[in-house]
Amino acid sequence: MLKKLLYCSLLLIAVNSYSQELPPPELPVLPFNPKNPGVHDPVMAKDGDTFYVFGTGKGIPTMYSKDLKTWTEGKPVFDKLPEWVLKALPHFKGDIWAPDIIFYKGQYHLFYACNATPGKPDAAIGHATSPTLNQKSPDYKWTDHGKIVQSVMGRDTWQAIDPTVVVDDSGTPWFVFGSFWDGIKAVKMTADMMGLAHPEEWHSIARRPSSQKPYNYGLEDSQIEGAFVYKHNDYYYLFASFDMCCRGVNSNYHVVVGRSKSVTGPYVDKAGYNMLDGNGTDFAVGDGVKYAALGHNAVYKIDGKEYFVAHGYSIPDGGTSKLIVTELKWDKNGWPIVNFK
Image (tube, rainbow, N blue to C red; front, side):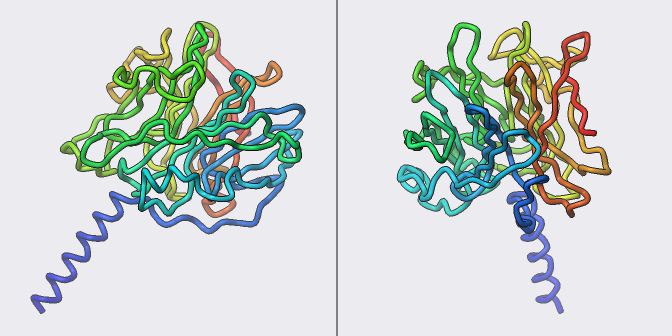
């Protein structure tokens, strides 16, 4: 009896430890729905008369649309894993995470994350370019340029995932990335976006409080990720996702926002509190009817119209992750407004 009780206690500890350290199993993938497509961590760009969306998955899944209403499934960006990934992360076997897309100096630049141990900073971010997003064009070809940055367990208290790039008013690109523990970082890039200009000059721009000891890497607090920086009028707006994704209808993911006159901060919320202290104004949350939760957003101005892009955990579809693209507006004080109805 004592042996059985001891076994059950150890099993319970192991299960609780697993649930805190690793994301839960993935939800079932539904067949592609042209009117309501599934996606996770979406980003968007327009090339010619067509919108393109990239998301998390094998080889970086793609889809495209001319009207943002009916979507067609495209081919993944990569048909095989870039060679640098297994050199940097020998144990990597998963999906490529959370890409970012930006058109810069005549090329589309795609940044993407690979995490060999989900829930740990055993991760790296890569970079690829293509002159076009049109998969039917003879010029369509992704050229991979290797690793931009890597996080290492036992050394780093930030995670090399969730990349995004913002170009400041002087034309300088900034690399923004990170999640959990010590939060979100911003680092100046080289003019060609091929690397970090000053790898030693790191700026922390947002984090949430953590009671953990260094290198514990639990997921029970400090829940922040999916940063996106967007310039509107006089301010840079930092959007970030708080709380937990990937749990279907049990997710509590939501988007908060702060703003700053500088890419490197300080970013403050509507009440004037610094995002480095765990603050942020709630901006986009689940409505309990259509979406249980939503997050990992991006914001774009395309053809004079501003868009909010994110994924939401659909209640009618049993918690599967669906694409959200809707118009973004601003209140009289310069804070963003979004409506999912």
